[in-house]
Length: 283
Image 1 (tube, one colour):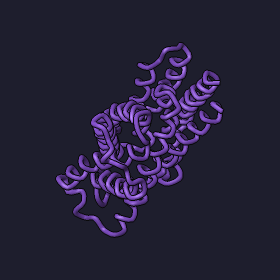
Image 2 (image 1 turned 30 degrees about the horizontal axis):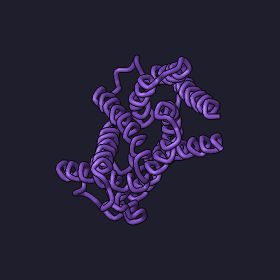
Image 3 (image 1 turned 90 degrees about the horizontal axis):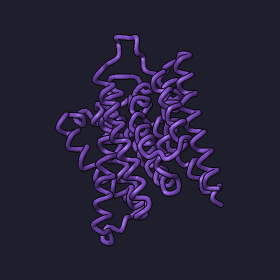
Image 4 (image 1 turned 120 degrees about the vertical axis):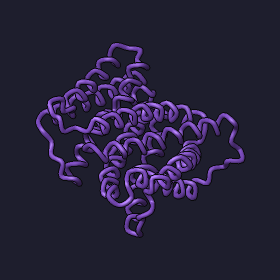
């Protein structure tokens, strides 16, 4: 029974990653119209509307602790996504996701209690070192810095997601968390003029991004975090660069070098190893 539970949690996490990176490829098409902050506002705002209509969270029954957790969870969602979109506005999607993964990687190392956990995290670290174009002067340093900062809030998102999934109804937590996130990103988008050129077609793309990149993955992540340890989930998310690279290849025509394929192999090794040994431990 525990094996089936772990398998379903891993499946939820993998499906979440596919949705996020497919949505990110669509989101990049919105950048020329509404910018990174406008795209973030559309993604999170529409997701909040969708999920609150569907889930109808019973906010009158929320405790102070649950309100606090939802606020922190929503804040991490807002900052993680807005800063990441600002990053991939400057650098390629695959590179941005790989640098962003520094956050979950360090979280996994921090939470590690066994030698094997460190081995899987180091495999992921090797993948990151291989994918960074150290010998080129054409990489946007600000973009790299933004991606790394987004990684910090990605780690915060994992920690808070683990907490809210164990304290309250996950559907209600995601719905209310996205409302908090909306209150953060919409004012920023309005201030930066990101929504001034909004059209019906861009609104439709925004709705697609909202479903693929927020509504589905945030809900699936909490399903996974309810059963998987935070450290296991952190290393499992090292598959994100692989999904990002494939999405870039399929939707944005971004081709991979041999070194990048080796990098992806390293992070896949880390994810598979972490997942298999987590399953054995629970068995």
